[in-house]
Amino acid sequence: MAKSFSQFVCNSCGATSPKYLGKCPECQTWNSFVEEIKPKSSKTLNKLQKNSAQPITKFFSEEEIRLNTDLEEFNRVLGGGFVLGSLVLIGGDPGIGKSTLMLQVASELANKGNKILYCSGEESAKQIRMRADRIAKLSENLLLMTTNEVDTIIHSATSIKPSLVVVDSIQTVSLEELDSSPGTISQIRECTNRLMKFAKTTDIPVVIVGHVTKEGSIAGPKALEHIVDTVLYFEGNTHQTFKILRSVKNRFGSTNEIGIFEMKQNGLSEVSNPSEIFLNNRVESSGSVIACSLEGTRPVLIEVQALVSQTNYGYPQRNSTGIDPKRLSMILAVLEKRLGYKLGSQDVFLNLAGGIKVSEPAIDLGIAVSIASSYRDFVVRKSDIALGEVGLNGEIRVISQIEKRISEAEKLGFKRAIIPDKTDLKGFSPKSIQIVRVSGIRNALKEMLVP
Image (cartoon, rainbow, N blue to C red; front, side):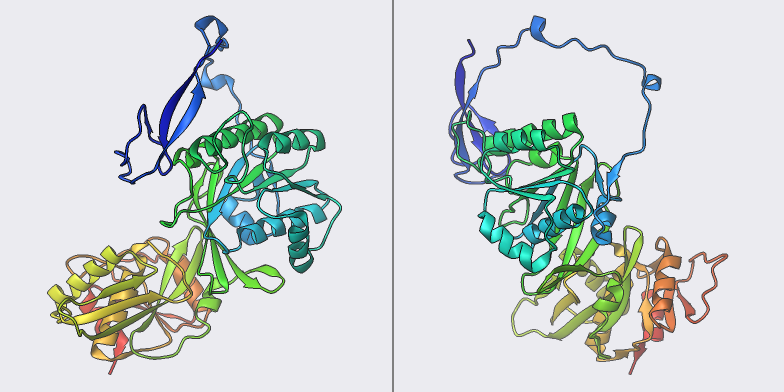
């Protein structure tokens, strides 16, 4: 008979230790180790399942069958819908709208005739019904269950055979055979493994909702994200109406796509043209420049706002919202070194309007021009858009898929596009937007800044 043994597991990163440690040597977190009782494996070589290796040519690849949700923004992030047998993890800040989004997706699928099982360990059935009355059309195909036992969920799903199972949330469900409480490392890992096995053996897609830590990462061991097929983050400020669904891992699609939703009284509505929404409240003033980021296959026009003012402290402030602070520091260094801007005594605040986050260097030129515009108090024309990456020598470097970006700007009424001079536009001739080529940041500022 298998004997049990004790080990200590870090609640933050999943590192193990035979004894208690005050500080985790892996993630440097204090007081994160908890005791876990595990049975020793009684498997022997004779009991291991025999499996023979086969040449790869003996296996046939098939196109994944997907479950269409009828929410185009959600489908875009998934890569076309739920792949049968896939395990999807969605995380986000408390109150951001994860449960609302999943109840809306479940309702859309149920109204198409699919049987959906929605399991909640956080809310009562009456609470979920109240939200459903507000955001969705009720259907007999949407089956509701409130339980904290993962085996009960799997047993019900096996007998019902739904098209989709939603578990809200993974931190509230548990296995009876484990002594630890729900939300601990062992419970999260084992419950996820049990749900993954169910999804793979039945070809029923499963969605699990996950809590996030104060650092913004999904609570539980990092191995949790490696177990699942797809990891989605629902982002946005709780005080803003616009929410962004972003894929950070997807075995069946791109990880560059984003879906944009607007929170309304009757639930989340899709934003099919985010560029128009982000530019809706723009005014012509110094420090405001339009740039374009490519999110997957879709170009999104963004207003870059900068405010440069004399510092009142010994050390100037450098605050950025929506971009990497190190990227901002690099662009400030280029402006100081190559153009002689005295920014060492200036506070610099940078913001991407609408709460969007961008890591693509294609908006570098927009950032540089917005900072220069605020510093010199010169206005940038509302009809201009800046496209390009800024190099350390002050040169403007070529960016990818610039034709898509120019076409999006042309569609929204922009008259001039400032682009790198070495950009190849063979076979592309926009009708109503003027192309202005610049070789460096100095030339770009001469073109765009209006005294």
